[in-house]
Length: 411
Image (tube, rainbow, N blue to C red):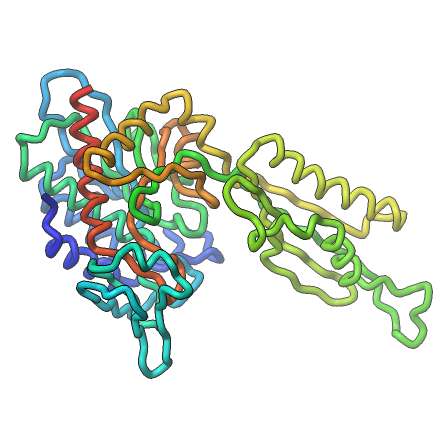
């Protein structure tokens, strides 16, 4: 149905454009170079025949595929982001194509002896005989989320070219800065005008997600007193030891490397310090809202006890909520998940319903009034040199979009 060669060429064009976002920038988009792909995508949407194509002053792109039925159908949307993660090198991407993958090791870079191996990345075994797109071992691939962008555009072009497939009004939205947690910040839900939408930003073929972490960030500052170490008895307070005491109180097993599924965690993401001042940066995650609140309360309790013990405020704590579990907003209209699940089954894809151990634009959009489950885009090992995506998974993702549009019109 979807032409794989056209999809591949479109995807390769997108990934070669450096659109890395920057968490240290306060502008939107956070990097000037995101405008390059944003303008290209606007032109692409216009060229394939979508209407009301717009790009605002913050690089948010929206477009419309009008309904071709004469009965009332909810307006649905499909959303992806065009920025690339700042976690790894994203410039000068040189994607490699591996046709008819044999199930063994893939040599990404002979000079650096970088190998993508199923001995470590077992999911590779799922794609034997398929076409894999990988990195050359020196950059990430940026399938997150240029795979999703490609899939949406391919699906919209197919629907334009095949008016015999009946569908209601469809809205398309592309965002900057998702990788730094800001993708939905300036998304105009009212302007978008959809009853609900789907983000195409999942991983393995079949993934369908409508639950994600509740998320918060925490910054702790520990205040010490510096005195000459030869005369420090009873006087020196080493802020680094205070930070260590805080770390030691937290449950050792509730960290990312020891949790899975619905299990929450505390993640120490950054630390620095000296005798006078030390700082810890944490992220706090839990799917369960009550447990999420309890995790924040645990931080507050430890800090209060440390300050009481020392008789002064030696620890300062700032906690900021980042996003919440979209399940609360999606579950009351769970039929939108059921439609996506049915679409996959009709395309002989086994749905994999599981919680997202992270966040997505869909979580923030759901709380802004646009319920937004997440569908697979096909990629694996995001944000690093071992990132890859099977071409067949991207084709199937595009076909899922088409089928969702068809099923929605037929309800």
